[in-house]
Image (cartoon, rainbow, N blue to C red):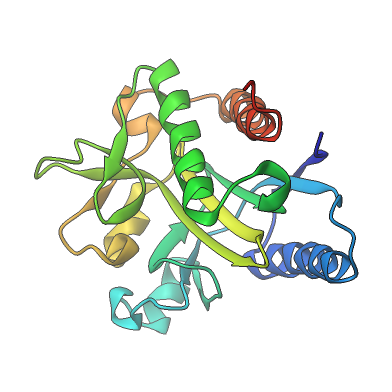
Length: 228
C-alpha cells in the first residue's frame, strides 16, 4: 500500500510553503527518474497570510487592484506554476498540498481532480452544505446551475510524470471581502462563499482539517486498494 505522510505546516507565508513543497516535489521526481516507484506521498495542510496567486495560464487583469492597494490590505501577489487562474488564500482557509505519485494510486490527472472535488463535496454534505461541480470549471460549487453559483473550494494542480503539487483551498471561516478584488478563478460573474457564510456560524477549523485529512487519505487508499 502506498505510504501517505500527513503534515500540518500551520500558518506559513506562501513563498515559504511553495519552496517547501517544491523541494518535496523535486525529490520525488528525481527518485522516480532514478527508478524508485515506491516513494512516500504527502498530504500537507496549512493556512497562508493574505495572498493572491495567479496560475500559469491565468490572466493578470483578473487582479482588479494595484500594488498600492495590496499593501493597504496587507496582501501579496505571486505568479505560480499551477493550473487555473487567480485565487485568494488567507486566514480561516484550509489549503491542501497533496504531493503524490498518481501512478501509485492508479489515477490519471483528471480522475485525481475529480477525486479531490468529490472529497470536498462529500465532506460538505456532512455539514449540511449541498455542493457540486460546474461544467467547464474545476473546484466545488454551490447552486452551480443557477445565477447564484458560488465557489467554496478552488483547485489548481501542477503535475510532471504523474507527480503532483499544489492542490485545493477550502473556505471555512475565510474573510470573503478579499475576493472582491479579483475575478475568482477568472469568472467575473461568479462569487466565493465559505462554510461560515453558508451555515451562519463560526466553524471549528481543526475539526474540518481532521475530517478532511481522514476522508482524503481514505479515498486515495481506496484507489490504491480497489475491492475488485
